[in-house]
Amino acid sequence: MKILTDIHIPYLKGAIEHFGEVEYLPGNRFTKETVKDKDVLIVRTVTHFGEEILAGSSVKLICSATIGYDHIDTHYCDTHGIAWRTAPGCNAGSVEQYVTASLLILAEKKGFDLRKKTIGIVGVGNVGSKVESACKKLGMQVLLNDPPREEREGNADNMFVDLETIKNESDIITLHTPLTKTGKHKTWHLVDEDFFNELDKKPILINSCRGSVTDTQAWKKAIKKGLVSGSVIDCWENEPHIDTELLEMADIATPHVAGYSADGKWTATKMTLENLCDFFHFDIDPVKLMPPVPPPPNPIIDLKGVSPEKQTLCAVLHTYDPLKETKELKKSPDKFYYFRSHYPLRREYNAYTVINADPTVADLLKQMGFTV
Image (tube, rainbow, N blue to C red; front, side):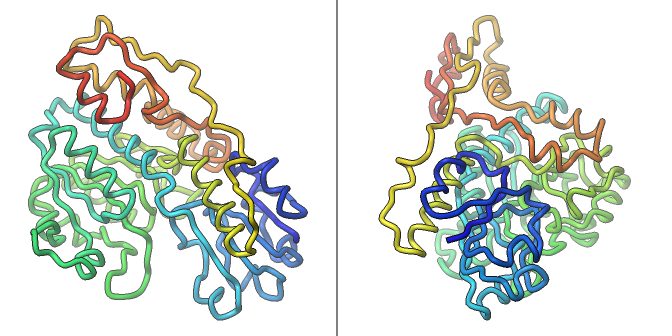
């Protein structure tokens, strides 16, 4: 079996070789020529896989080490006998870490108390549910919007609200939907000029799902007109050729790395190998083939001397500070793909031990996943 895999997928090398003959390439070098004689493609979101690449190939299975699938022409694959698999939920903890860090940074920067704010979560799947839990731990009021889930599950407990309520009542709006361009609940340009014009409270807007869920030009207009009070952007339209004007306007701007924790990447690779085993009926345990996630360089967080009101911020930023990436990306936006492909994978909270936490903070940090 011939396998072509993205060279930038961590924890795969050494494990995937147990399944066949392997070739590694950067994601942007997957072409019609390089995939034509391959049986399996292991990919990220860098390249779109449709007829232009897959026609006439031997590909039987595409495994994406990501939660989304808008980079795969699923209709073409389904009608041409090509199976496709993803890794849903693999990076939920990592994206939650990104959103939490961003919320704490902006609360400090703009001088507000998160416990007095309402956050609207649009899209409440694996990631949105994790963000919901984190925001409740931080003492925020939470509104949930997810029409597909509401249709499937009903809304007997008034768990979900409509998008109008999100726009009317949210101080912060965070997006966690897939990107869909057709259908009853399409999300392409869900946040457009009309959306911005209907906002009541000038909220902070966070996009860490897919770039085209938001309309870039409409977002810029909204910032200029004061319709939003802050912008956090990890996912961009036209990546890696992002809009540099919007980049400069954003409070936090990162190169699509919200889900790039070592923990999330390890899980994505494990799920990818499990998908491969399932499809070809291999009796192999991927975990036994994979290396463990390495510990962080500084696993002890000492909060001695830090005021209680800043200890949560200090602990979270010790694990991850998106402002560092913001500074680098604003300095060199042309290096977007480089930054993303050479990202030094961070660890999530469970890799850290906190000492000298104030008793009023220690319980929250435990709930978030830290060892205290």
